[in-house]
Amino acid sequence: MSNIFQNQTILIPGGSGSWGNELTRQLLEFNPKKIIIFSRGEIAQVAMQRKFTDSRIKFVIGDVRDRSAITRVFSQGIDYVFHLAALKHVPICENEPEEAVTTNILGIMNMIDATIQAGTVNKFFLVSTDKAVDPVNVYGNTKAIAEKMIIKANCRTEKTDFLCIRAGNVIGTNGSLVPFLIDRIKTKNEIILTDRKMTRYFMPIQDAIRLLFFAAEKGIGGEIYVMNMPSFYVDDLAKLLIAEYGNQQTRVNVTGAREGEKIHETLISRSEVPRTKYVNSDFNVIYPAVNVDRTNFHIWDHPEFGYKTYTPSAVFDSLHSLHDIEYLRQLLQKGGFIA
Image 1 (cartoon, helix red, strand yellow):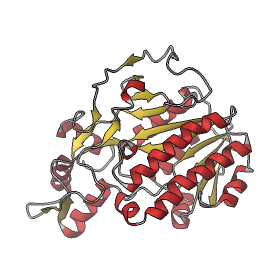
Image 2 (cartoon, helix red, strand yellow):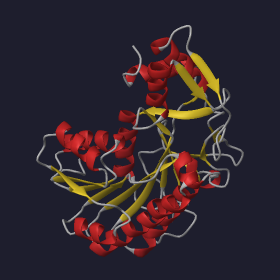
Image 3 (tube, helix red, strand yellow):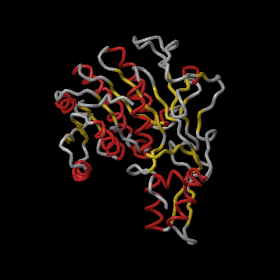
Image 4 (spheres, helix red, strand yellow):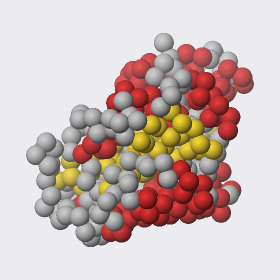
């Protein structure tokens, strides 16, 4: 990978969470000029300041819903933006849809406007989710709209390339399933499952950031890069964590799927398959449905990618990309969650 981040100023909205911590750690290896962590989580920022003692990292308390705060941070001459800020938990977004819309849609609108007005940003990356595909919940719907706004933003400027990176669950992020289940076993000697047949995509955060950098280097504006993530039965995850942290008395409480929750997730919808091409074993890329005024994506090719197309009947859901429990064990070991 070429070093596109050397001596560059990088803005990470929502950067004080798990994604932001790992992204910052890896970005520092590329010798950037400055990394700006822009988030409203004071406690999370304090923890991150104590973790990183690098003068190139600057911390700014601010909210993507606050246009004036965004304008101030963009006055520092931003070269790259990795947008991580969002309300992400499905039940919270179901209960507080107005808040989800304000952060996940209006916040993106504010960021796009500020980026175009600044005129200094080379590339803007939205980290999206598999829940944006055929969405059935508030969170997924807000991220689906955010994706479309980002792709369409390419029509408004020739100075900035806007791209999306779509992923499933990253193992071990704050508030996510793995640390929740581990804590539940330790404190209650119980695991809560919604459905034993449920499948989900999982990937270690280190790998997710590595793939994010690939898209950052290769992206030309208008694409959605989709991480080819392995999927597993959530029941297998429970078995491994009980074996590591539980005992014969550990209970498994099956509650049924929650409101807005799918049994299986999808990385690429059927309507997107005709616009999707294979990049490599890590990525597929979805061309835009709209004309983004950059290039003809239907004939665009990259000599390094070796593209192939998919038949219209191709399926990209978590039931059809299942891996066995031993592979899941390896991922949990890689993440340091089991021995």
